[in-house]
Image (tube, rainbow, N blue to C red):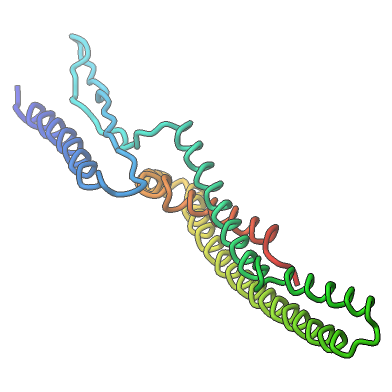
Length: 231
């Protein structure tokens, strides 16, 4: 009996275990990479060779390299990341509006109260020239405050619009990358290669670098549209 089949079987076994060691090394190298999912090698018994005495084994084959993950936790983490993006966008807009409509003596409300009080004094003493001057002064201050607030709102609106355009461009870029990858599955001859690339792609991106970022951007855009000042 020739030793070639035995050598071939040994080579296949060594190659399969080498692939497992290589995957383990890859997992260790990416242990501190944010969003990385651990990979594992799936092995399967090679189809045996039939003879008059029965089937003779032909070793082991590497079926695929898959990622180890929990679908529920992945989905919940993506939802939490999306909500965090929405809350961050809302907080930024509310803080901006809070800076425009300040409280205290520097705020629009204080200037409005001062103007109304001056009008009450003028109504009580319509012939008083000093009261008239105070009304004019308070009216000018109130107009200046409204003008300042209006300019700040216009600036905020421009900033929101620019941010939305940037976010939409990023969303389109991420969505285009996903679409290009999925389109390869429509070509049967490239199915195996596309699947391998998809496994590596999902393992390194799913936990925050692509789908989480995409969902966070979408929620942020939705919140900017809902909370941001309108023209």
